[in-house]
Image (cartoon, rainbow, N blue to C red; front, side, top):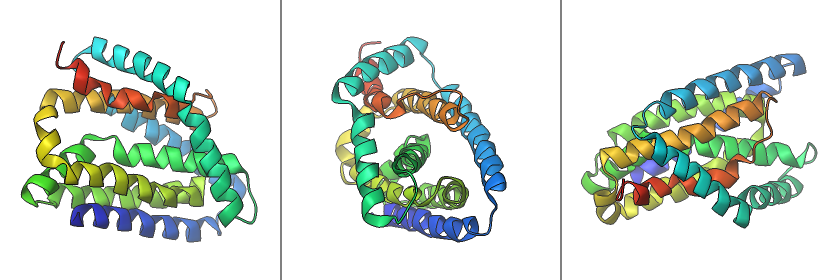
Amino acid sequence: MLGTIVNAAAVAAGTLLGLLLKKGIPDRLQDIIMKGVALCVLLIGISGALKGQNTLIAILSMVIGAIIGELIDIDRRLNTLGQWIEKKFSKGGGEQTVAKAFVTSSLLFCVGAMAIVGSLQSGLTGDHEMIYTKSMLDGISSIVFASSLGFGVIFSVAAIFLYQGSIVLLAQWVAPLLSDTVIAEMTCVGSLMIIGLGLNMLGITKLKVANYLPGLLLPILLCLFM
């Protein structure tokens, strides 16, 4: 779990630094920074989506995942959590800001191939090199996200612990299921969600991106039959 702990600590430290920097940035600069971040988010999403090798798997994963997520209404539950956090820890601001920051940063930090492969390496061989590299990238990203989206980014630390920590602890059992093809398709599906996040950040759409989250796991099943 050392790699996961370092990754979480890097995000926490980056978030705190980003919050300190935010205090000295005028509102109009915060707005343009956020839009710049959104464009970078789109770039990350598009780059990851191109790694998919089977378009049908991506389509089925998104459609079936959306149905499951909508029935559970993950987006509403995360927003409710964000509102509760806002009331407990913030003296002001909108509840949606916390939820948006939490969902956006958590997805960006967790759905990439480095999170999956790096966690598998940590759990199977004790090699944390890839997670350390990811930690450095996430730490830098968290500075930018916190300065533009606010303190909700800090709660993505919990998502990193749960997601990457679970893969590390279950590595010997899940490794046979996560072939290079499966990881590529999971990255593709997750990256499509990241594109949705980027569009939301730009104000172009109002997608309930969290409701697509179940689709992230579906390539594991679909790749067995397709």
